[in-house]
Image (tube, rainbow, N blue to C red):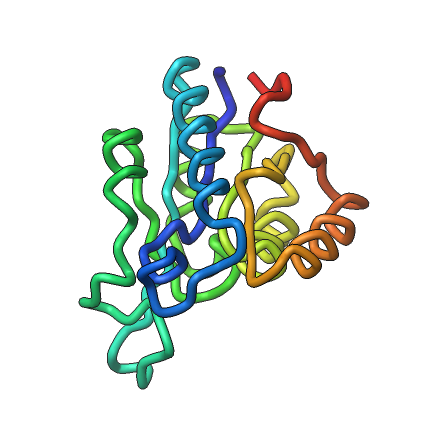
Length: 173
């Protein structure tokens, strides 16, 4: 779909079952993300994968440390989105000190469809970022997860007054 991009945030190994900080409902979220990627591919929609990296000079963190397997995007995601652009971030807001806005502007994107991990943190901060205000932002609720269902639902409720909440099987393309 012209002028629309799929942006998936922090789909990284540390959030999956063998990682350092596994999240709630992560396998179903992965399946939904793969469906969203397929839908984006079928509609020639740009896909941007945002990856959080904690650099060693910042003292390290419990997960997403530079050079670890946990910081990597799972092979399933990469194989389904081989042409995706990857944006590396260090802050919760995917626009903060990254080239995300530049990439979107270069592709004349007007609408961003967001999914990712964690709903109440990086997903929320990106969706309601000051920079995101120039875009029509939609959130794929079934392509998001966090530490538990309650926090996920609270975050979605909070976002519902600011952006459109949709699901993979809804008409977003």
